[in-house]
Length: 531
Image (cartoon, rainbow, N blue to C red; front, side, top):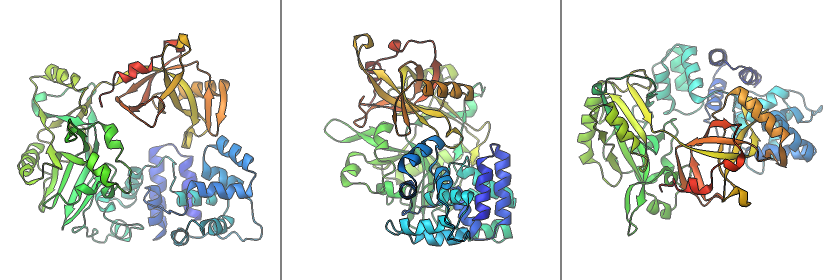
């Protein structure tokens, strides 16, 4: 636990990517099994201890510290684990004797909601401040220390001089604490045998088509659909569905687990079908409809009937024992087209290619896609192999131009991690009528990106100086500032007072110069709905 706590402390105060890689790689080389495996599982977000949540920690603290002091301190610090580790009262009757990570895991997996409040304090009493911070982060799964799963896997590859692409492939077929993976990477053992497991393969990704000149004749143009990128894997009769990050989302979409009639690894876009006249299902619905299915552990029969999922296929990586990733895109596309007749049309269709005379014609086609469930276009080099990650010159994404609207800043909340000291999450609204006639502002979205560090400091200062009310970590501010907000689409929503939900809102420009009464009205947003 001491070594893991030291690692987390170093990572929290390190901003450089290469330095973070070095720190993690050194830890993995110097720490024995299985502790290093549990650490990797924690850094990649693979651990889940249902009995210990952030609320568990908050309740423990309110029993030991004045609740008002706790709330004020948590709000100021901006992180539950850090606040609790600082405020936890020292128990002189308990010897400081930090357990190993393996001991921590053995304790946490056996906790229940009833036993956690009794057993967790016994662990915390044995630890110093930094170790308490590490334990809480480890137990709750809320790392937020500037380390992504990809960075941790890259550090593993760097530590043992192996390919990160191989690490990525094996990773998703194994379980923590990954003894087979460390035996292969650190000790030179044979690669883990995952031949009979439905394992995830890293996706091939695209670069933005910005100020890049390409010869259109060398590329195929294809629609970029507005769903979620998934990989459907079937091996030895078992099927798994993986998200872009490699998360197993099979349970959320059970209707796709028994429809693939052959062993294969398919790349495509997961979407749901929209309703047409008469109650029948038609083509792809908007992302807003798909969002109702995402993240659910169980799916009702009603939802399966009203929002049936299907996959719009892009590519085929493996087919009936043959690995096609080294083949050209043109050859893989031919294989995929030939495969379609063997797949049920109720659950699969093929992403169509887009024919254009030249780039000007292609741009014209792209500009006319606003009404469909389309994000833009993809350009794929016809002779490109399927290579994990982003490789320059092979695939490009050409997203449609964002929509823009002027909104008024209404609320602000502290961020997380390195932004925990700043009000960096902003809720904004539009006028529900004429502001000169007393119309109110209704919240329409929330964003925490699109501004520089210098602008963040200026915004934080404005929030502190114009606070009207406090609601826990949220500050209501005077209506004095206009944001020009960019977003991809807007949809009807029963969960919001405005009746609207924006897709991917981000701050495009801070309009320090614009009077708030000139911000847009709800009607302007509502007119853009394409549900």
